[in-house]
Image 1: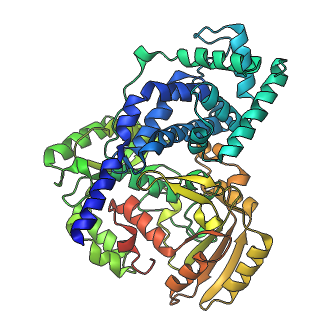
Image 2 (image 1 turned 30 degrees about the horizontal axis):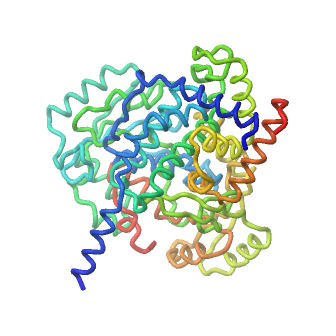
Image 3 (image 1 turned 60 degrees about the vertical axis):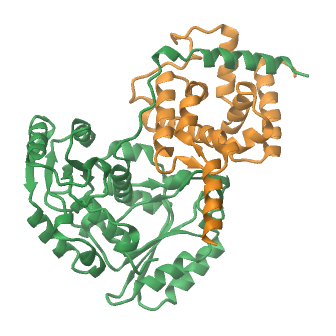
Length: 175
Length: 345
């Protein structure tokens, strides 16, 4: 009986994934995701670091290897949401202002056309913005996006459709 | 089939993502001393506001229904920021203490570092014996805690009073990486008022992430979770039913309902010093709360567990939580909930 239990546990342990290694492996990608959400590299790096610190050590093992990356991404998205919320309230004027990459004064020079798209994206509701980014930047499937955002796959589909339609209207493109 | 919008979006995102300067990327740092800090975050949270895992439910500890009666924690008047720096003990469950007491050299080094800080107005050292004696007096009502904590478990500490406008986090920063430091804790003025008889019943807010409010979670990582479905706010019918239930409970002396506005008003008065916190908190972030006092001898444990099971209740703050928070923030002793509140589980 005991032997059986041990083997089972061992099998489970083997399937577990080290979150720290996922962070290391996907560090740049995660920072990019955060940057698209929050607009500047410094905040983006902080978000990823914070998510890493939270999930690290002790609780650093996930049972389901397939969901691990989704989990890490979702931790980063959560961090981005808090940054945006905080900005919307307290720190609007208090923190040293880092121009977002899509602003005209940003050091990261971007084409006018691209900027227009990113500005429109930023003005979308949070869910649409996140779903569109995960789809069109990371090429994730409906299910992967659903896992990352903690919503259903069908909601992902409708959210993306609505988001695209809204973008099309703002940008004056007919999809 | 891709549309023009999709193409433009893809291109814009690629370009935005490409602005990340990979050369300047700071490497990820492993968190250090996670346990102690995390525990103390809980205390500060308990003393101030904790937004429950994304839910718009704020929880804070209060002394009593009337905060004018609240007595400031430890020495020092309310209003001026007070900070405790606890030194390592042998029994502290803190990796960076390496299972030993802070040495004389470490203590002197900490003393020197603190003396150089311009933010500090006053500094007092509290010896272990004194700290233990104060602790015994403060926890005379809680035998479980008295039994669990030995004299050598209570750390020595520096108690600092900061100058007007100084940020306690500067103290924490200055000591970061200094060996022999168990933890740095900002003291919240109303915390010490330990009302054994006060129970707060926090009601479910909108979009709560608590299972008690009907939210569904999926475990993600040990101890972590993600919300797959948001919970519902308490309904009027549930509130009325709850009020009836509470009034029918034995030993309940008084019952006060605080709506969001009342909660916010009180919160605003309590944290009038903390501008950042106030600006970050809106009336909608406040929870609705039933606060009840019990007759002194009433057995609160069964009441608390019954209240926790009522629909529409997000969480119930038992008198014990206050004990745990005080134990950590004022005495630097971190005990699991089960040790502080054996009745509570």
